[in-house]
Length: 209
Image (cartoon, rainbow, N blue to C red; front, top):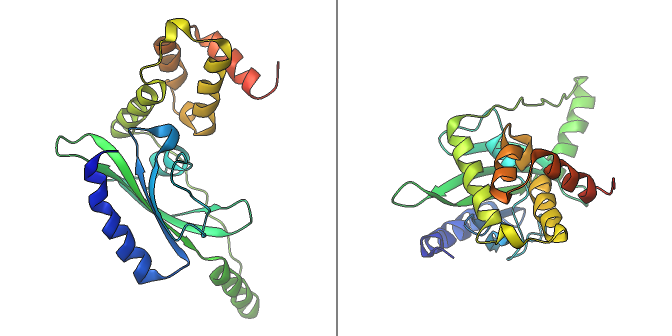
């Protein structure tokens, strides 16, 4: 783990302590994408654990239309047990400007939303969900490229078994890497296979073969 990330642990503690047990704070080390979580406070909110991978970095942070200046605030997602989470995330860079990590704040607002729904019924108003369009800038592309490189890492691509290749492609797909235009071509080039082969790995990962 990059030692600079440890300086964010007290910040995580302060944020969680300020907003209480319904506020989870997570520090990620993006140099190790497969096990990026290195610190968690109030893990009961979403069930995050040290050693797990990121979930929302690509789909809801980097591809969010409001992502700017290395951060995005107040995007929503739901946990497997149905909790409604309001989240904010910021990338962490080192002194040379390289992205090394991410700080995430996850607040369980399920109770508040239920109260809002009841208030809306009382007032006779409708609550509508706003779906954000996704946009990709050059700064996001740089982060995606780094993630791809670090996921493949020091793997000897010339001696990869098909099973391992499928595992790598499946992980990237689950994390939203292939939502970015051109990502499949970059992964194919790094793994030394064709674009068609990457699609065949995706099909196998999804049980279509």
